Length: 140
Image (cartoon, rainbow, N blue to C red; front, side, top):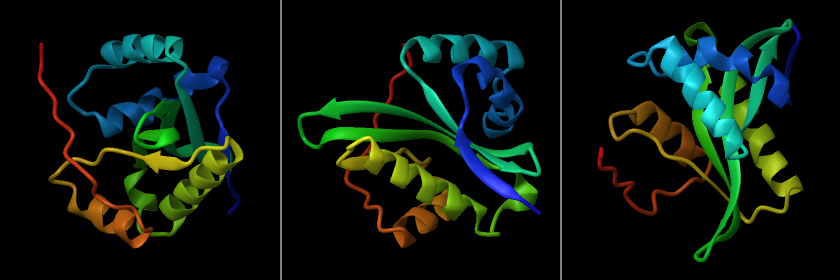
């Protein structure tokens, strides 16, 4: 079966909402669509992983710059359909994102992973990602 990865054009980003809802099951479709619209205003991008033209994986990303690391790519909501996990497709998606970050002259690629998601921790550590801090959050 043919798989491929591409950046999803902004005009087609609504196609990610089904997978975004699976990645964020506590959020309604309405909230996700509203937030996606807002994220696009802040230059949100998304890579799509396709199997025979069916979207089976996504990873949002932003490009930014910080004092401590320079230009970076931040990944967001890296998600692969459950039946396609542990098949090497997640690694292909992350490898594509890393190459894309290099092509954009980013010095660093970063992401957040929930503390309870030990499978993600293992995956990223095997790909030489390091835990360098804690992400703090406060609901306002």
